[in-house]
Length: 308
Image 1: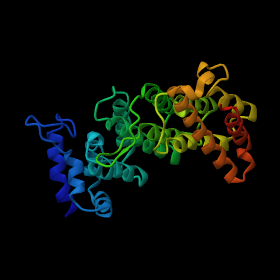
Image 2: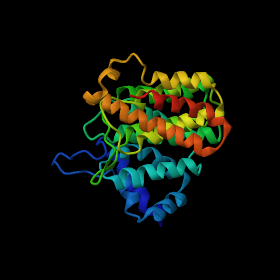
Image 3: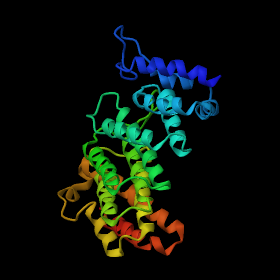
Image 4: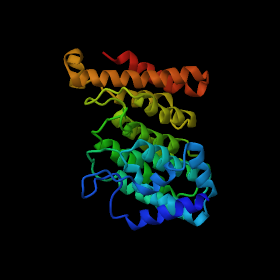
């Protein structure tokens, strides 16, 4: 029954693939992304998950790729509740094959590397989906080291160019590009195959948005950015001196912004963001009661003490 409901809509979606998800039709009306709309029409989260589980395997492989344009749909129930949720389920439950996962990775890397758009959904949800791709490799390693390098480089490039900090909207749901990218970096930091140069590259990416001067975080981005730092601390790639130097680098003592912190919007934003980030790391490290986290805790505490 579920197959007969989904398959025709999937075929229709493939036939109309030339129209990007969620864009206006020629008449100016909103056009929902059909594969996600088909899943959403089946009912609640449980019903959708059962539909995906009961599908013919070949149809499910096709559905995974057909859902990727739906990551840009402006309807949060279709974008997040149907498309992303189904992709996450398929990858976490190993319901799609390696070739399809690679196809998901290639397309979401392309989406993440595209220019920022006015709606601002596609790139953050591409990054969140890449976090699920990275998780598959963490659970059962299949990527070459160069592929992991590519994911870290994509995260770095995305954060370096990010100016759209929109988090949550009652009407449109989540965008949350910084946090979604932090989730990708977290999955990579947990990977047993990770090398120290890759760990250094992850820290370099985190540093890009730990203390921005053009935005003050209000949607938990600080804690999400702290997560990959904590997991890298667990790996013991870095000693206490390395951690101290890294935290110091987040706001060097000779930065002119330090000279008039309370008379500058940019400096106040940086202060707010770095304090929240360092506190998130410090509290997590201390709450763990594990000696492994002491070097990162001391580095975070030193940063807190150095803030104006």
